[in-house]
Amino acid sequence: MLIFGTRPGAIKMAPVVKAMQAQPDRFEPIVVVTAQHRKLLDQVLSIFDIHPDFDLNLMVPHESQAERTSKMLHHLENIVNAAQPEMILTIGDSTTTLVASLCAFYHQIPIGHVEAGLRTHDKYAPFPEEMHRQLADVLSDLYFAPTEQSKQNLLMENKSTDSIFVTGNTSVDALNYTITDDYQHPVLRLIPDNHRVILVTVQRRENMGEPIRRVLHALRDVVETNPDVELVYPVHPNPEVENLAESILGGRDRIHLVEPMDVYDFHNFSARSFLIVTDSGGIQEEAPSMNVPVLLLRDETERPEGIAAGTVKIVGTTIEGIQQGIFQMLHDKKEYRKMAHAKNPFGDGHATERILKVLDEYLD
Image (cartoon, rainbow, N blue to C red):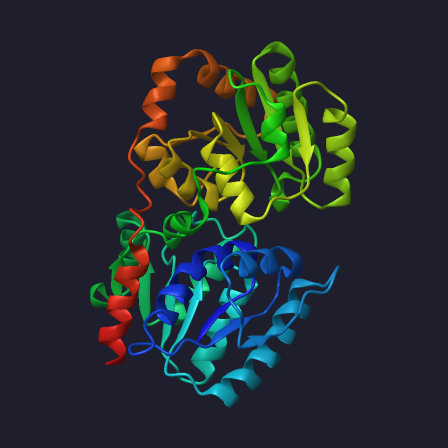
């Protein structure tokens, strides 16, 4: 049973689902979605042509973390009782991840955690994801660590070496399904070939309010002082974010405020961008495979491998830090090439194969 509920979780679990479905002699996948993210989840399911066996449809606006957790556990309990899976596979660090792991534990069903071992070692950053993934790893039986660093984190927590497998991250595998050579988009047709596209996402809880205000002011100034730069910003559907984006960036030349992109559009836009400025976790893993540098709008990351490899640079959320980081990318060709062509430390596109090999042997 594969359980997920968010857009990032769906993107990363989709290659595993598709690979299992293609091998019915080896696997019988039962796909369960909690719909923790309803609209964004549905976009991913549609693109990958995945039809869940169970859809809990649990998304409720303004629900507390405790309400979401308890309700999810109750509904998953019923599904696990009905389906009686041999194993439960979960992904990442969402509420769904925590609850799926807890439910499996209560039923004494083996748990496999895809993307295990990520750590900031600060229980409140990111909140609540850091503790979700730590607790999931306490309960898990198999750990599919994306990198050697993730493995070391697990070993420091006394997890058994025999239960940890360095696979790479399945988010890199997903690019094989989405990026196409003949991609077209109305916004891209508006941008001259000799202009450089900066793709922006900012949506983390800790960046709401004053941090995102600083980010948007910094980006506006970058566009105004660099006439060959085009800013593309898929605006997060949060009323506060939408209002700030419109008031600070709206109606300005070479700034394109667009609707949130599905994974197909976003991956193809990313591949055609000069630079990505983001506070996302998954983009840190994906962009290096497209040879696109990432500037991170955070003060720390649970993915330090990107920093060490030179594919990601932390710029924080101060106006000065953001502008300095972007200026260097725009004007220091040597530094740009160094970041753009660094090897992706998060995977080679074959994580799914490694995961399925381990599962096959474990369940045999």
